[in-house]
Length: 143
Image 1 (cartoon, rainbow, N blue to C red):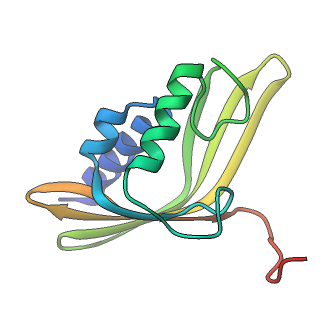
Image 2: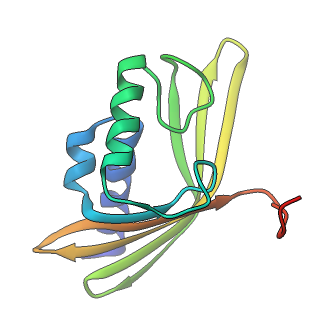
């Protein structure tokens, strides 16, 4: 698989999150997923149920995962400074995720740095680990 194919897979995976599409999310994510989401909890989150709950709840409200605006609004995501490292049946993508949301007040952009580790399992690519960190200078020691 080429880097372009890995990027296409990654965008499909991220689009499933954006659209609260749990079917595609589950198809592109390993069941033993591990992740760190700094704004949710300072601890590792394991497995699919966490995001399945978030995505189902967002879908019921008509909200978009990661967007600042509430309810239905136009959104898009961009991968700034995307870098893919590909090693046989594994790949790491690192980038700054930009989520732009249009509202009556104007466009707001939320961002964070992200790495996603992908592995080819039984012939299919799966995201196995995600690590997110602030895209701003966070203090090293909590105040």
